[in-house]
Amino acid sequence: MTAGERRVIVASSLGTVFEWYDFYLYGSLAAVIARQFFSSLDPQAAFIFALLAFAAGFIVRPFGALVFGRLGDMIGRKYTFLVTIVIMGLSTFLVGLLPSYAAIGVAAPILLVVLRMLQGLALGGEYGGAATYVAEHAPAGRRGAWTAWIQTTATLGLLLCLMVILATRTLVGEEAFADWAWRIPFLLSILLLAISVWIRLAMQESPAFQRLKDEGRTSTAPLTESFARWPNLKLVLLALFGLVAGQAVVWYTGQFYALFFLANVLKVDGPTANILIAVALVIGTPFYLVFGALSDRIGRKPVIMGGLLLAMLSYFPLFAALTEAANPRLARAQAETRILVTADPAECSFQGSPLARETDFRSSCDIAKRTLAQAAASYETWEEAGRPATIRIGTTVLTAPRASLATGGGRFSEESAAEVAAFRAATLEALAAAGYPAQADPIPAGSAAWWRIVAILWLLVVYVAMVYGPIAAMLVELFPTRIRYTSMSLPYHVGNGWFGGLMPTIAFAMVAQNGNMYFGLWYPVGIAALTLFIGLLFVPETRGRDIDARGQGG
Image 1 (tube, helix red, strand yellow):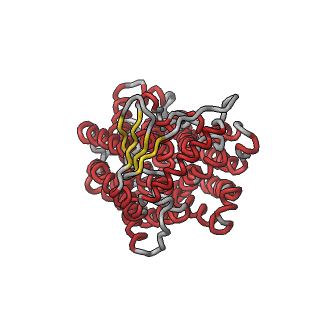
Image 2 (cartoon, helix red, strand yellow; image 1 turned 120 degrees about the vertical axis):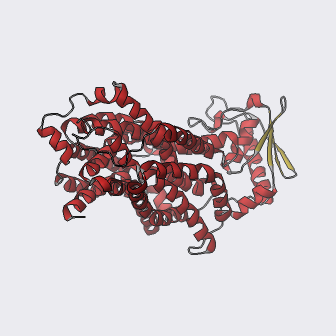
Image 3 (spheres, rainbow, N blue to C red; image 1 turned 180 degrees about the vertical axis):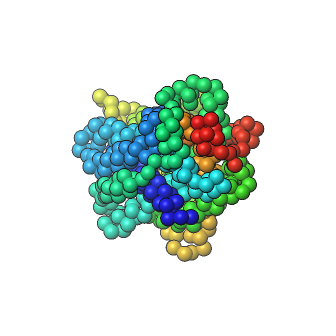
């Protein structure tokens, strides 16, 4: 690889790493942000709503893909993703300055969601530009290997994010970090923005696009050409449902959901969970390059579809093994002591609502299920009409109260608040007596348990590398040069923004509603199965295609 070729990869990748760093700061600090910006909600609802605000950035990513993809196909790759990184960096910096709910009330979460949406719009234009730019510079037989560097950027951005958070936590302490120092990683983004802009100003336009521009053959209506003409629209739909949707849920399950599962379900302390994920990412990230290069030899489809299949078949046993390794007392308690909620289904609300306040759950069924959900205790439900809900923990049976609101609403009456508090205390006491831990035991670094957890997390990252490493090359190869930026960006960001970005929110809502802490895994397993079916039957292999403007009818 020549110095010029290395410059193309480094310039494209480094800016994208910083952009992912900005985007994933929020997700990595979801628990802290829930307390800072959604403190008026019930704790379980606050966390789900924080995840929903996290997902807001993903929801708007396809719109960013349309806006910036169109600009990229009309005016060029270079200038378009120069604009996107400026929007991203400034939005992230402003999150670090945003007052909390305690300071400005409901305006705080509203402004937070607005900034998340600006981040999502920017990211919607970033990835397609970077992947297209590198692919259009790459030699034909090494396109998978070259674009795999772009594929590492999301993971490297997450890793950088976790390292900065961990360093800040270590320097200032947990109390100060939760209070004010969580803002530091957001404020640092202004330095990364300055570096990124300096790098990208020195970049040259891609040869394939420059040739189109010189010949006057760039598209004047990339949206129409991409989505209003069936031959190309068919490719867009196949890219979405036969490639990206499954890739997205595997990516977010293997990295973000695994982190949330460790910290919020298995009750591993935050710094330890971050370190474990970070080590797994360091060990696993080189496999993006391995599988990208492998796809140059055996094809894109075998690698991607193989990753989907492995993830589908092993997620449930892997997360069960993660529980055994990270919180063995919880695993043992669940195996030895069955928890059963008996309730009238007519009084059971949807537990996964992100808008719920504590006072919205007043029936005995809701109070029983909410208490167990907040304790991260899996349970089964038995329906029985006409009676108050009960929780059976081993041989202990507790009857849940019904709550009433105080005059004027907004909070439980004093009598109800006391009854609910007493019931929750009794439930936690019964759980403790049955061996359910309130917190995972410390996991010494380098211990056998520590390495078992890293190995499981590493395997999840390897699945991510299989499905994600070759996908940039495959998406680039599916579409013609004149509308490539637009055509590949939309399915990528619908898949990763909606199917993937909503994965933690949907999965935790499913767990809260069903009661089984593994139930949320059915979401990525189901989406991966759908993508595997469509991909195997209908998506063409693209390795070896000529992506030059002339080769695809420019």
